[in-house]
Length: 465
Image (tube, rainbow, N blue to C red; front, side, top):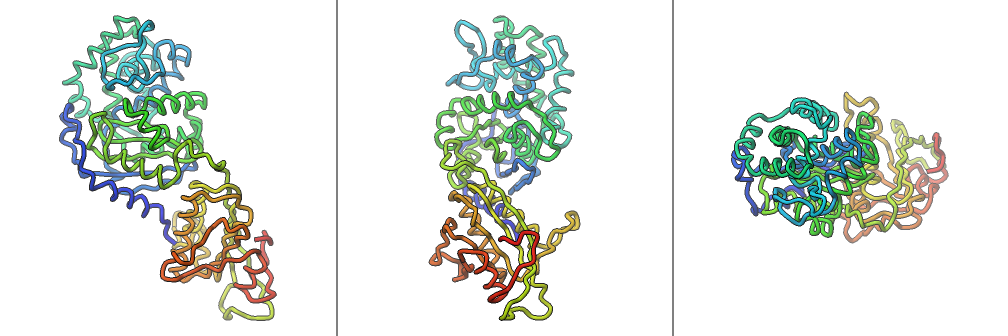
């Protein structure tokens, strides 16, 4: 069985594609010449599973998205107290390149505007570090987050450096105010260099998943960012990550995010998923027009708004295989192995739980993968059981995804039984595709009798379905 999640991401992509608003960033020559037809979207689960659609291997410069991660590096290298003494955490309400500092303290308002980001860059390694030392530290850290070696796009770096007068003015303003102590030109050049690091949406989704996973890399299980730093970064991303559109973003999308003028947006929903989108046309606030539309659709349809906390998202998926010993009515031919694959869900199931079920279905019932021993081993099972006996609730996106899984299995001609005594699945026969329905029962005995005949028994490591 093929997972429906990539198909859904493709749908999100194509829904946003007709939006022709915005334009490529014209103040950076390389970005002004970007192919604005390119689009991509990617989700990375906190256990490392990745789904993507569109131009997901196309590289582009990370730009201001680097600010979130360099802020975390600065906290690690200089300590949170020192960072807070130099950079505030309040939304500015101004353009990202505004020439202004906080009254009384002279601090930049937050680390997501250019003044704050240049200051954060100056705190990496140490105040006396060289440009090369800071660049190497940042490039190595971002590469560990992405899970592959990244590099600086020299063409983008030179193009930005050529028109860096405003950022240079910010650098000298910071030096005059006593916020930075290093050479302002070196700080600005280093900041521009970090913005010119090339990534793709899969890199950014994995980097975001580290933030969603309390600083632990989903694949390597390495603690890359301390959990306290993650909390600080996500808090500032929530209030300041989308510049002067932060209020609109929190109300309409509702997860911590950061944008870059090359057209990317990242989002991180703690404990669930890292998100990345890419489309080069940006609005007057510097945010990707199509990227915002894609994130709005994901939030609305997948229940990703952080204030949507109707039920705690704690769920598990357990897979087991039973062999039926037939009862008084034989229902199988002699060559049938009489194997039944049981997928048991527990708890309050939201998107991550439904995604794990989807992944288990694709692995157990799909085609064998030479790189994944044991995959596809139950593609010819005589029956499939979904047990919702211990499910407390399904939110709407979990229910929608499970319904799609059911429809695909039935289309493939699978014998499917649903144990749903509390009717949490809410299967609507009137909306079933081509009139195909699973068998819905109240208990394990009814499921066994339907698949194996009245009075059959199950031989299994887990005799209770």
